[in-house]
Amino acid sequence: NNYVLSGTDTYTLDIPGYTSYAAGDIFFAKVAIANTITNPSLNISSLGAKTIKKEGGAALAVGDMPANHEAIFRYNGTDFILLNPKASSASKFFTAHASATQSIVENSYTLIQMNVEDADASTVFDTANYRVVIPNGETWFLTATVNLDNLGTSLGMVVSIYRNGGAWRYSPLQAVGTASGQVGSAPTVTGYATGNGTDYYDVYIWQQSGGGGNKYTGVGLLYNRFEGHKI
Image (tube, rainbow, N blue to C red; front, side):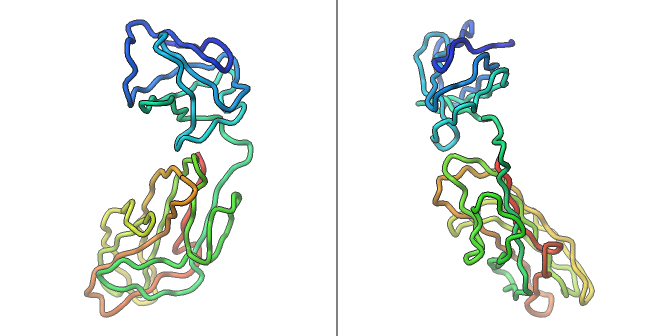
């Protein structure tokens, strides 16, 4: 059905047969008139008005629901969460990499020292601690890739994005074999993260033993990188 929100800021929507809010319910509706306040509400089928917020509980910005916007809402048991606010005119992103070779401990996860910012349009990345902190209420797509060189044999590698010191997302286990001085193809890990202003994310790599000692990451953006884009 092509549902359209009625009203301005205190929106209403009638869905025939819908009789009770349930946490996790998803709704699709076109916005007829843009929101002009930061705490608009939505009342579906006269079941009661609920505040519309962003992921993480952040307030909307004026115009996050522009006219003709195909909005997606999720009811979380308390509020309606707008899953697709209008994209900001100012793009938010970062890209970082490690600038020096680094010893990797076998059969253990090693923090990759992403100490160079190639771009950071929103000042979210910390090169001193090799981590990113996502602003409260914002959802970012994160991706990381790491190469090892001078392996000399086939070894398993896993790249992981950690959150607050614990593994959060893993790449698949990937067997990599190279000759001395050559770079093996890198595993890549991705994930969507919603920030609260304090959680931090960084990149680790695990490699199995049996290659004749510790290995080293390749140097530079070509070999390893950590990227994020606000969605």
